[in-house]
Image (cartoon, rainbow, N blue to C red; front, side, top):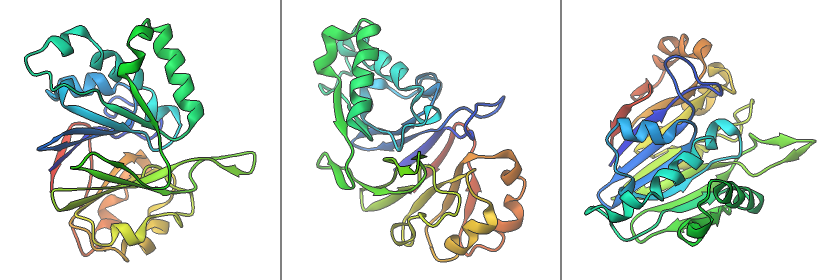
Length: 251
């Protein structure tokens, strides 16, 4: 399998980093983890065929993680996609953290005049635990504490994706104290994709030392913490890297 980091920025896009989006390429099709803007353009630039997109998984409802979703849907619904010789005969499932989000995106697509095709956009709501299994890829949602409002913890997830005998762990965004880092799932993962913005690397090291993945890759990268990478990564007993937009990681 291959993970392509389409967008690796920390909240706001920069001259070199777009918002969070990663594409998991498998022999069975492709899966998008988060859809920060401009996810559709990033897919096109990497030569990814929208016909291959089987599902989109949104970790949480902050704009830098879903702002490019309407562009993904727009491109996936184009007649040219359905008329293509490569048409694979399925519509992608769009997995969102709340029912409210499903309602909002339905309204948005109606506003964009895709109301007649609403039945071809397969919205689903993420629940903790195993929530997706297409017979090839299984995805589990592990709640974290990144999203808070008025003292309440709102739906926000780490994802554990398994296919082809491999395991990928995507942390999404985490709490500032990093105590919601998914240690148990990351311990033996083939690849861990971890944010590097909402906590200081020193706080993360106590958790990074407890895991032994095939590789640890950082995305959603704060510039100030990227500068510290060479210092703290030298203490790890396994390979680590800071992802850039367009990087590819095979595992």
